[in-house]
Image (cartoon, rainbow, N blue to C red; front, side):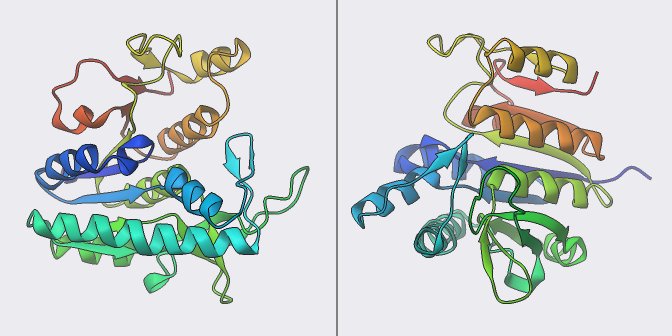
Length: 261
């Protein structure tokens, strides 16, 4: 018996900061048929609020360094302001959404990243997903909306990359569903030339990905994003695409499709 399709969408970038773009995306997302799940970032909003509070954000290789003060800010912004704003807008669109962090119902268990060369502070790496609980929500027509906050089950909240959360949830849910994972941001896909917004690379396999890194075409924050894409594909996720908000409407012929081969 064929598995039911589950749409998992991770939204980030400038779309979250743009109320019109966010509203348009959420309207399209709410119209998706069948079970669906949303994961959101919010790094740019967190940066703005951090700076307003006199805290200077620190990034290394596209990843945020999270000290205690920064953890408080990102928890407030991700799990509070943005998560509830998105959830409320989905309710307005008759999409019965439930805003969640990883700590809620022990949905995403993580550990504080081990220091190797760089100390990322209270950054979390995912250990386990409570897929059974998420499945119960989906079966009851509830749309989970996950922010980028996890926990270690010892009372410690952790800041976890939203792309990683989307990938790990997609992997866990692939036991029950045929998962289509879409990474949605302000660009049309992975670009050959960052100055040309239409220079989308339509297909990237693992070998090409490694070559694009070596050539410097893929760098900084795009590296961990694509790492998560390929991790998902290697571990059971059927389909992974990267593009702008039109991707989920299937009206955009310009996007990046990822595959192993």
